[in-house]
Length: 330
Image (cartoon, rainbow, N blue to C red; front, top):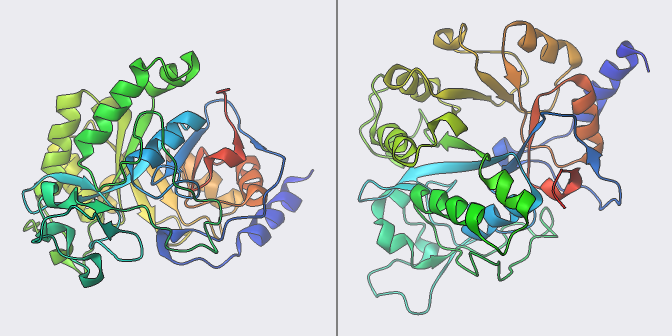
């Protein structure tokens, strides 16, 4: 198959509308799995969002069971400055419900309370086990997982690190699953928004690390996971501040388009470029590689598009449906 024909195919396949980092509609089920090349980085988006409610411990356990090489997740700050795993700036009624035994002072999700307005203990009173979009996530289910049971609370980052440690030692998992948990990487997105600094509300000045970045780096050092982690963001200020605080930490530049636009400070760094997959071509992937960048686009749920991107040379994919890929675990 000629390279010219393949580039045209990739371009045609990728012109599919999507909304922000939410990803495209899930494809129709297919018995065939996408084959992955050696060393490919398959990242479970918010755990395994297409299969289990996002950014929850069961979702991460599901992703680990399937053998992803990286757990992708989002970070905010609680009122008591704990780094919390959640995508939105608020606790939303379409994803979460208040547990029946919750104290009276915990607000209902229908008031959309800010993550930053609640302590980590407060956030534990929400069960975020609702499917916000049945049409896009028809295969998302709630299950009693082996290690995480039905704990669908919003949890601190340290709780995930503890889960992965337990997973690697659990006799409930296969030898290959345990071995994978010992090497699985973490792709941590700083949910900063230059147009809404109050969404995190830690006084970030755009230059020095804020509480979110400093607490995240401290957690990585404490758990000894800095070498297995990547800090990613759409906000280049967060990445630059993180790099200046710790030049050894790996960085991923998120972009909403497929244009190769890298912040000035990162142009000589061995970064990961994570663009919207729509519009990616073999030429833009090769250009990124020639400049020393890995290319890991988001959020790819179509097997056809995934196969085309792999042939075009991407180094990895971020997906809601890791079960659509052939992974080395049983």
